[in-house]
Length: 360
Ligand SMILES: Nc1ncnc2c1ncn2[C@@H]1O[C@H](COP(=O)(O)OP(=O)(O)OP(=O)(O)O)[C@@H](O)[C@H]1O
Ligand SMILES: [Mg+2]
Image (tube, rainbow, N blue to C red; front, side, top):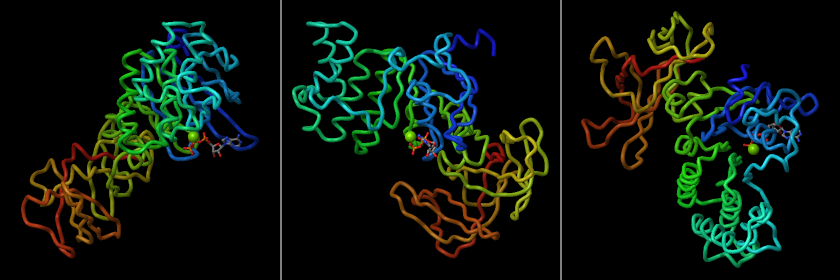
């Protein structure tokens, strides 16, 4: 690790957490840039909260170091970190009104009078709670309480904000509104944000980069586009968006291209697997890249399958095809175009070699 890389906003060097013999987070190294919005995305129990709590100072790492702005913060007490924290169950002060809750971090920082009131009003407007300023937390819905927690975090404009599933309690439309609002606040204040969710769509919408976690380790770190189009593992390919998966054996893999043998034949694809020497690999083709019909040229590849279900979802019909080895693939079909497939039909489908990926 060079001294230059410690100039990142945040740097984790082999940070790990064990509880007795159980590993909640394997040694993890990653750098977060100043002003970046990084999302930790992964299934329940994958170590997201554990990682966040070590950054916040609420949990002590078992090994490794944490650097903030080039300073070693590994053992710095939580109350000297000045980070904004919004957790899923982060309690508000019950004896204070909404406005008093939001004013609290400013009072701690010796702001008072008209300046303080203006800042509180402005922040409550941003989370659409200006008309609730005088209520107490127990007089609010869960979603409203969560928005107070967001306001109480953003109001003091911390340089680093940690959020753990902050929108979990909100309904879909409010959740989408707050996603955009958090993004806007993040851009406006240039804050660095580490955000935890297990909602892949939320991660794609909000993040500069996504850190995909599984089984206490980082599976892949990259921009939403990199992770969606060039997954490095089967887990990343199937956890984010829908993937059609054909399992098989690796025939060849050079720098970027590979060939896989499956029960349906041999296929080419971009070899994005992190494990360069894996024998058991899988071909990944996204549903939107599959078309009905035989492969039109050598740049395309395809196979045939029997239609065993058609699912109408308004803008499109989802076709489920059963392949000869018993596996299933899904593709999208515009119901307005061409002949309508029926259950039991044998259909050829194809895709461009350039969009297929081979992962391990
Ligand atoms: N205090 C603790 N003692 C023992 N094990 C713990 C403790 N805290 C967390 N764990 C375990 O560590 C693992 C990772 O937990 P963590 O809370 O980081 O998961 P998560 O990714 O945040 O999951 P979720 O999406 O459910 O919140 C889990 O298996 C959990 O049971
Ligand atoms: Mg958690």
